[in-house]
Length: 259
Image 1 (tube, helix red, strand yellow):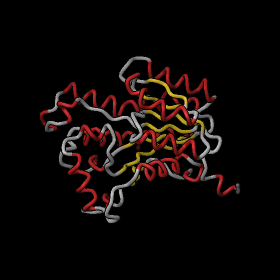
Image 2: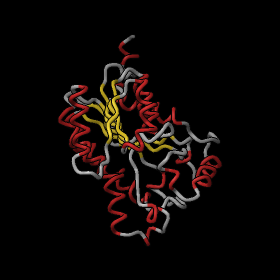
Image 3: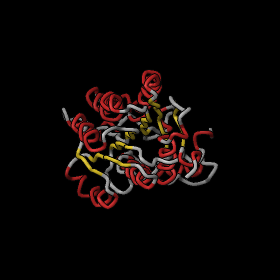
């Protein structure tokens, strides 16, 4: 492998990937791609219920799977401790967790409860800062941290509701984290995929209409695939992306460019 081609590889890198729920999860696509690119991966799923669906995916690839509910005190710390003990260090982190109480998610933003909004921000946004704080001391060579966002952060998308403001906060957090972690050579991005039918997305009302609207607006006239999202994420974790940080990067078949 030449020096140029190796910069596009994850060979020898150690990654922590949060949020695998099933074989449709963005986190699963990223974990599978990372292993194919030569990385060692520790991944998380929510609990034992999710583990029944996730472990048959991760086990054949040698991915070390750990239960982690970011709302439970100590579980995120335990996940990072396990990753460091298993791999020695961390080179990249992919955070793919989003959740809001269904009653708040399906209602108008003005009707959302204070408690529901706070929980949505805590799980979907602030947990990214938490895992960054825990992982940064174990990234001696710097590296990459990614989280997943959506177009509804910057414009009002029907039925996306509460998650729009939450993702806007996440994208702002990415910029501040990029500024703060840059001196440690840690790069931070938000990846903004077009809609795909993940477990989290299935909780959004009339999600089938949202997907059809995306197809109708997209210059490529289709939805993106899990593999395309994973490929972009993998690239951002390679040395080839070493000059990039603080960005929201779209992989949505061009929908973001249309009015």
